[in-house]
Each structure stands twice: as structure tokens, then as C-alpha cells.
Image 1 (cartoon, rainbow, N blue to C red):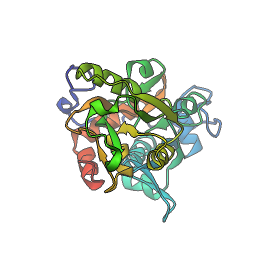
Image 2 (image 1 turned 135 degrees about the vertical axis):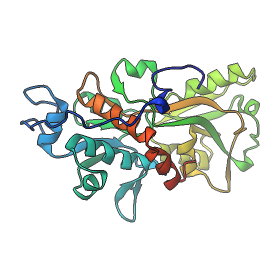
Image 3 (image 1 turned 180 degrees about the vertical axis):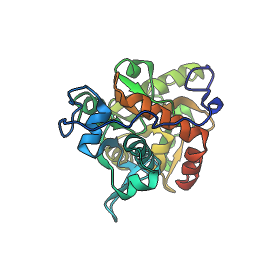
Image 4 (image 1 turned 45 degrees about the horizontal axis):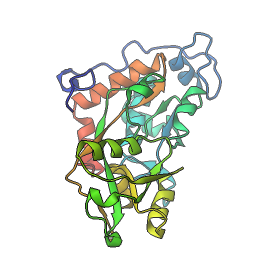
Length: 283
């Protein structure tokens, strides 16, 4: 990261008491909404008894729906339980044992609206922090940093970024990937003008790549890793671009936002997130 911001000096913080002052008495509210009489999201969650979490179902190591167990798993799933532990003032293990999180699969197109209509309390789904998004939602400090990658079939004949000229790249609807690629090509002085096709989800892009309907699949490298095999490769992986800072999103101005950010800060400070990255092979 090149610019110093509030998101970049997390390591200088000491451990934060993420649950300080949260001994709130639950009051009535809608099943999915923030609609307690006081307007407190935290009180609504406590009254409901569950933290409603938007997560990915198709990103190994982050948010993945295991078809064998029919359960979500990954760093972001565990992070949701840490947020629930802070809200309900219990330990992380208790949050998991009591099943204090309800998980909903989100896509780049659905995650924001589901926060807005109070169907979700948080979105923890490889959600990149951008100035534009921060105008509409609150974000925690980043808990992970990734970069964009461009994956192709090994027999595609594409070995350099310049080979993308005139090629069709599959990207996800609502993502920042297209702009990141165009910016990288300009910054690197690479003369290439690819075309783009948007898809509603990652499996659709992967299928399009494997069937030859697109020439490349571009997304965060953590996502591409889910679909990587011995027939695929990244184009010039040494070119790091499109830095993606992942944050947890909450409703703008919600009293939940501070709790979420304090929890992330503490987990960065005490090394828990680093341990999770190793557990899920994200390093």
C-alpha cells in the first residue's frame, strides 16, 4: 500500500475491547431488519438471536459452501462468528457452538442491496473497499489484501498481458475488475484493448473459460485459486495490480459498524487473522 490511511496503521493499535459497552437489553424488531424502536442494530440482532451474515459460497479459504457437509467454511465464516461473539458478549467458541450466525450467499450484485433493506447485518464476502462504496456503506478496516489476476487455459496461446489485445475477458457483475485491468494496461504501457463480458457468478465465468466462450477469467487471485488446475495458469503473475482491500460492510451509520471495526482491529493486533490465513492456506 502506498498511501497512509486509517486502514493502514492497524498494527500500531493495542488490543481493543470489541465488546465494551455492548451490554444492551434486546428489544423487539423485525426478523431481518434494524427496526428496534431505538434504531439500534445491535439491539435488533440481540432480540433476533442471530447475526445475519452475507458471505461467499464459492471462494475456497474465504467463504465456501462444502457440498459434503452442507456447511460454510473459510476465514470469512470464522470472522463472522467473531463478530457475533462481540455482539452477544460470548466467546468465539460459544458463538460457534450456539450457532449465532445465519449465513446467506451473496454476489457482487446482491450484497449492497441486502444490507440496505436490512436482510443482512454484515457482508463479509471478499468485499473490496472503495471510496465510492464507502459513500453508501460503512466498512471495517481491511482484514486481508489481495490483487487481481487473469487466468487462462494453458493452451490458449496467451502468455503475456499484450496477448490480451482483442481477447474476451470474463468478469463478475458489479466488480472492480474491469477498471483494474484497464488501469494496469495503461500504467504498464501495454498496448492491448481487450473486451469484457459480465457474468452473475464465478462458476459461470469458469464454465465460459473452459468452454471457450471467453479467453480469460479475471478476478481477485483468491477467487481464481478456487478454479485453478493443471490446465490453467495466471498471465504474468509477477505483475501485481488492482490491490483489493477486503472489509466487512455494514449499514451506513449503524451502531454495529464500530463493533465490527473494533473486532477486526483486535483480531489483526492479536494475530488471530494471521493464524486463520495459515489455517486456510491463504499465505
